[in-house]
Amino acid sequence: MRKLSRNDPCWCGSGNKYKKCHMNSDLERARMGMKDIPVPRGVIIKTPEQIEGIRRSCRLTREILDRVEESIKAGVTTEEIDMWVHDYTVSHHAVPATLGYNGYPKSVCTSLNNVICHGIPDQTVLKEGDIINVDVTTILDGYYGDASRMFIIGKASPDAEKLVRVARECMMFGIEQIKPFADIGEIGYAIEQHASNEGFSVVRDYGGHGVGIKFHEEPHIHHFGSRKRGIIMVPNMTFTVEPMINAGRYESRLLKDGWTAVTIDGQLSAQWEHTVVVTDDGVEILTA
Ligand code: MF3
Ligand code: CO
Ligand code: CO
Image (cartoon, rainbow, N blue to C red):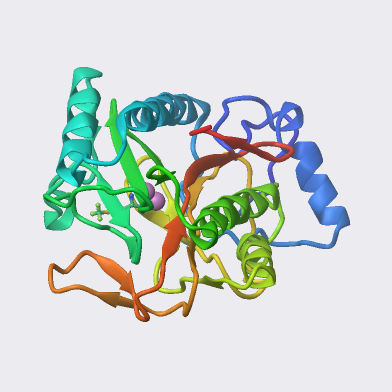
């Protein structure tokens, strides 16, 4: 491939001249001795226009979670949460991404207590002391936003409250590692360090993912393991960080419905999720 010259359009798709855009950070990387950019195959580096679309979708995703936060309480069924999410989404001219996705039947995932992820809303009634993850993915004007939060119903046990808090800290420590040209493995390394320091384990069977133009894009984001995975982050990548943290063992088991993942030992699991964009000097949380 021909080397970019100063006045060429930048490789990132911004439409700006290379010298006004990524030339300096590329030179900096070269000084650090990084010759190639080992971006994985299939990663979509978004244009500024695409990022604006994803930002708007992520804003709606966050508003939907705020809507859930207002009304969630003991006595509500997970199917009612599904209804709130569905109605709020469509009334804002968007589409719930999970509805019909690979046959998934609902507009949201509701993962209660020992459920790790992809719990399907049903007649289950929330009760005092439950912990639940509500995971919302929105398609607005063709762009995807993906985020989830934990909710504690009334007051939970100190152990459950700690798990929910540490899971959120794990997500935030993971996000803090994000900056251009750092290895993508730094995210999972920071997450696992914190989880194991607090006596918890990290789920390995599910990870974060590129998101924005499609629901699940490259790359896969590990929430555990090596700091060096040989893939670096570059400006204008958008992806999720969504660690699932278990009170007991890390292994998961899939229920017969083909979706619901539960802990193998029946202990609690907690998860938080944000969609982020890598900026020129760090990270922006799009669903914050
Ligand atoms: N929102 C989930 C994620 O964070 C994916 C749910 S897919 C579904 O990646 F089909 F289970 F809904
Ligand atoms: Co996700
Ligand atoms: Co999600």
